[in-house]
Length: 562
Image 1 (cartoon, rainbow, N blue to C red):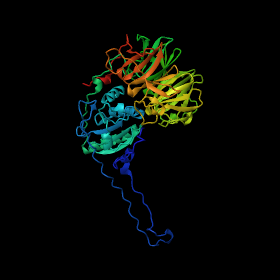
Image 2: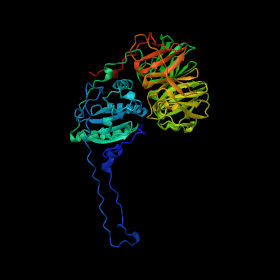
Image 3: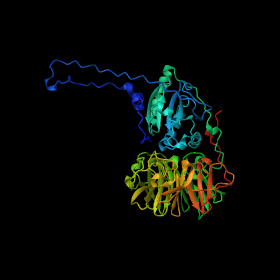
């Protein structure tokens, strides 16, 4: 959960109660408090019987009417703007989120389960109140709606007008409005499915008794009905170039598969059926859910199966996929795994990138704000660095703090980390000793687009790093640029790449993963659904021409219901 720590804290309005209290208030009674009169010593109080006040059940304040949405806002996943009047009789769940936030991302599956369970009774409205400048753009939110497969309306609250009206102070915050249009309460953070389920269930019962509940289903005009992912790649997140084998491994993230081509883009194989799920087996049958980081170990390809909170191993010889680490379920408590543990019995939390160094597989555990290490010789896994707090803090490995680490690289001596939520590049040793050091980046709300040296440098939510010839290349994701950092002098400057003649479009659209082979830098240009290739001598940029790579069959959920 992220809170604007450097901004004045907004006071929650007095009617915003935690859901747990709001849903059980009627069951509580006042305690009887015995007091002596003012200034009367208890030892000399009168022996006359004292009449105690009768304890009375408190009268809760009436729930306030939910503030209406402001006019002239951009809406997605709907044919036009929505008002709360349009949703009269529905239980409305407002999800205050921002697209970079890992806690917000973790909340989305819970919302999807609630939407499925109560399809006729509730409507979820995503209120996107941006953190980063890039996230204020409706087009950026639209891409996130597609990438995260969101199936409910989303409003662009770029100036935090709705946020302020409802007294919100952190991401994510979930607020419930009953069938009479009144605010019941709010809860923040992730992992609140059971609480929300109970409260919504009770509100549905109440609405039926009062005959205020509207159980007529509402169908919304989703963005994905028009942009169906019928391109060869769909939001590719990471890429791994194998110079020796002359291959590219592409995490085709929202197609839920890994595409293998040669260095020129010719299809060699595809791992995964193309539909989201969690299934081992032959390449054509295996299922992933938002695969991200990749690492090659001989004939084994390790895959960070992000949404399944697992590491999968694809055997390139036998053509089979097996679970390698994780349980398939998110584990919010495993961040305390500071002693070697069984990888198949240890829950993970949104592994975002992988890096193999000798016989250690390093894992950027974005959901835990930590780095983990899998000792392949001992077959044990544990926390490597980070105390689990979302922050930028240097120090010994165990006492340092990260904020959603999303990219890893090495120069053979040190690890370098794209620490996305603090817009930073961090450095630490690979031998288990030493300290974590911040090269650039100042904090959760210090970001921008500024070249320079050390503390004056600003980047914006970088997701990828790549070591090359003593420098660190950075995928400056939200600035749509590549940058070059000298880890010795801390000078950081924009890489002066050259686009195709006559091309007026941006050279990159949220670049993320990067990898180098044969003098070429391969970049997963996520929001443009393509791989960009940078010639490291000329710095000319071109798009990798994929041949033989077809999109998977369309998912049923991406088709309009008749």
